[in-house]
Image (cartoon, rainbow, N blue to C red; front, side, top):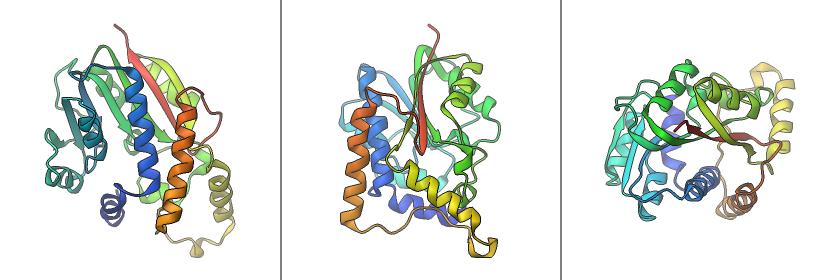
Length: 247
């Protein structure tokens, strides 16, 4: 990840509307699994640990977080979050069948060898264990934001499901996420392609958001999250899937 972007990420991830809304969706997907609070849970790409903090506050007792970013792990440790360490998400230093749940939000697209990563995530799941994975959607939405983030790909729901099945997982559910901003995002990304290259500096899509707008955008997406707990969306800026390892 671009170092300038990485530092910015850790500064804004706790309060920026997009990160808050995604954590809200992941959190409720986990809640809907109705795991016992003693279930061992691994978050791959935990960054500064805000999701781990929320899960801990809900009573989950055996949480582990890893991230390839030393800066992100330092932030998590400074917050007093236990069991976090710097580790490559495609080469996990955990025994087989260690976790009942693995969470990976916007991680897989950063890993060049997708198959290797998914094999590892499957390996550390216990029989019957589950995976929650989020990735950016649709290759035609590729933009400078992806380049700054050092992404290798974007996914359709079908492509994500196929990759999970090839890793030996059973796909229980797949859906797009962030539907409300799909069409504005698509319009902006496609328009930028028409601009001369010299007018397109390499930068991410996260911009300074006034508090009121931040609250409104967070509210729109979290309201959408409630619908997506029961319905699958046909389009979105991101795509997520829930998969299970055979018992």
